[in-house]
Image 1 (cartoon, one colour):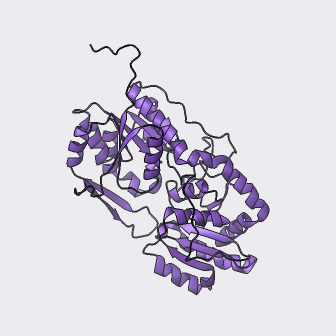
Image 2 (cartoon, rainbow, N blue to C red):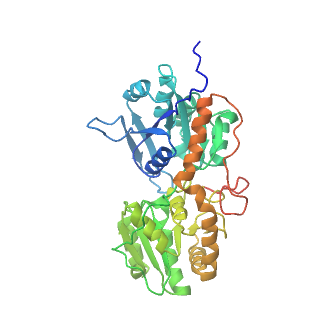
Image 3 (cartoon, helix red, strand yellow):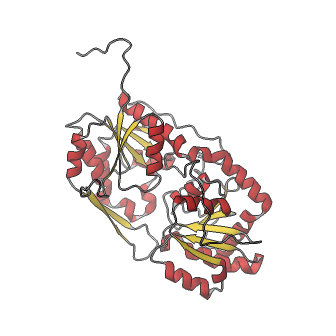
Amino acid sequence: MRLRRRGAQRRDPRVLWVSCDNTAPHPYLVDSLRRAGRAVRDLHWATPENGQRSFGRYLEFADRTGQQHPMSVKLVSPRMLLEFARAPEDVLILYELGLVGLYAGVSKLFHRHKVISLVEGDYRHIGRAGTAPLKVVVRRLAARSIDVFVANNPPAREYLIHTLNVPEDKIIVGWWLAGLPADLPARRLAAAPLPEGSPLFVCAGRLIPQKGIDLVIHALAVYRRQFGPCTLWIIGEGPERESLVQLSRQLGVEDMVTFVGVVDHQALKGAFQACQAFVFPTLQDFVGRVVVEALSAGAPVVVSPMTGAVGTIVHDGVNGIVVDPRDAEALAKAMHRAADPAMQRSLREGVERANGLLLPDTVAGVIVRAVTMARAGARRSAAAAPSPPHGSGGPDRRGPWSTA
């Protein structure tokens, strides 16, 4: 038996953080964990790095109706298993519970590292893309070898317990889907001049049917008739762009809409800070990372009830307004209400009270806690991560979970 000398300090665990690519919030989380004093190696399995071919590919198949979440398949080479088996790190952090999770579990036969899985939400709420029987079977197998799960919200916890049969004492509930860093500089959009004398609204995301951008354009026509002009910046690209341009012309609101295209996070933050509200008219979403980014940048939100952000980080009348985007008149009225100066002050105060929990440096504390729990090796009941009290605009475990 090896005895550690009295007074000798235990080495901080080394972390291998595995992601598909470098899409936000991953790079911000890695940087924050490093600032928290942890040694982190970053591995992107779907991206060629250092002259080496990638470990796999991410494929997505669009739903023909446009209403369902696209079906995705992650093809991951067995070389990933070899990479994990050779990894010198003490802890692996994963987002996936598919083949990547299975490989991480099998690698524990060769290297006694701990494995942490971050789970965003209840996969059943994204339709067939989350409930395909083979996917559920693979996730259940992978879940058996995970030491600690970090559930982003209560529905994610319920999914782990009731669908994947994960013991409750292996789960931490803590918000890990971070927004934009507080120290990220904001930059004005040169291609989209600020409107004078009319409210500015922003939509951002992939231009695909389930994001509901067309519903906002329909609402603009109602807005103009009832309240006067306003401006909408649409940030992002996708296959629906041309049809959205045509729709704005047909409805006579093309002068109110600017298609900005893809921007970096500095410009995105600048857009959020310039607008009266961020509008998220999705027809189906786990949470909507862009909602988290908007809130972390200080923008009130007008959101669809068909996103997991409602009842967790968005509270109607506190830091945002919840409205069914399929009702054009109701959406127009919600946007007008959000732009009202008195409501603006109230909503921004609500955003300010809650958005600290969404910042990457705060989220790093949740991850550190999971690493500590995994290293301790004790399977015990995990208390929920700190959250604001009910009604403060932050995560509310008693609040509704409204999604498609």
